[in-house]
Image 1 (cartoon, rainbow, N blue to C red):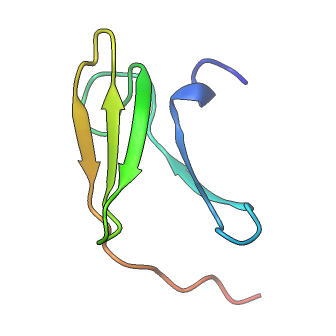
Image 2 (cartoon, one colour):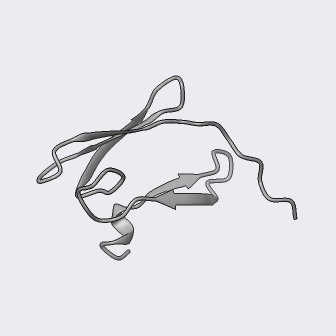
Length: 72
């Protein structure tokens, strides 16, 4: 895995673990990641990611609902 790919967060289908989407890139701006360390989800589906080293922060990604899968 490339260093840039390691700084992306991947979204997987719960039952099959099939990759659905990914987000993020290397950096220190909102939505970017330096060195991710932990992640957690609350009861509303919001995602929290913590960073160590130079990042030293927590980022919250707010769950805004699901979108229907594209029809095949």
